[in-house]
Length: 328
Image 1 (tube, rainbow, N blue to C red):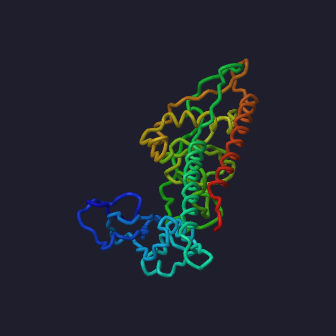
Image 2: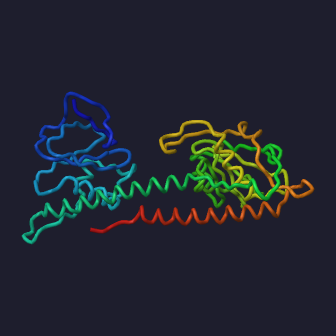
Image 3: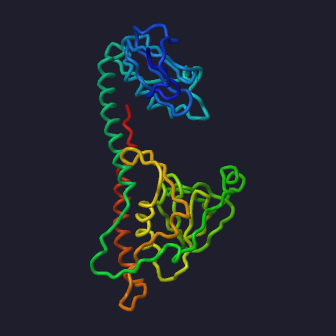
């Protein structure tokens, strides 16, 4: 039995007792024709099979290292514009050219290729570790111990905010037909879903992701719209600071989410629809007379914002390292 590979060349599509390949005395490089284009070296003697969604390049010259070829193809694929729109078909791959080190005699330098392949492997391991660190830091929810020095009152979310779900009319098709300058947000809290020609909300407010990475929040100070993958908190009260509320509510929302959490928080798909938040409570500082203390809220929020800025700077530096390219 051998592995059969399809569009994903790093996970077997099936295990079969037959193969469409005829010669395993030489190495190959295989790649996914559809989906996410990745390349994988298959050493000589490795039995495998491919579907019509997987390409295989048979290495005829023993002085070409398969691991080096896989890495250099991976690093040059963007030059040919391969993506889901331009398939890396067998015909298109025939036009791909790569650089291979040569020795003083003009022959392929196998040792130099192997050294470069080892360096690329090390860099990829480091890149994966940095990506994992980036993911963990990005997913951190900032909390602070506010038990000393302040007095608080518990407030229900539904007492402080009108809870609204975004509109289901906002789809990719709608956005393409109504292009404009106003942001449309969906479940992603890091960027806009689209820019459209109208807006639904024009007052400062909060919003949260209903599904996906449920519970993560955004502060809105400018006009915007939202799909039904996003919920909106429209303030009922004027003495709750919007930044304070975001930082205090987000961990409350994240604890209330339901759904799938993968290993180390990866591959999360959780849900937090409006009915699940209306009875949630959060703490708001109060003064000596029991009224909401806006000054203290702003003081606490400023500390949160400082930490958030440090977090952004760390993530930016990690992103720079992750995307760093080394030219051959």
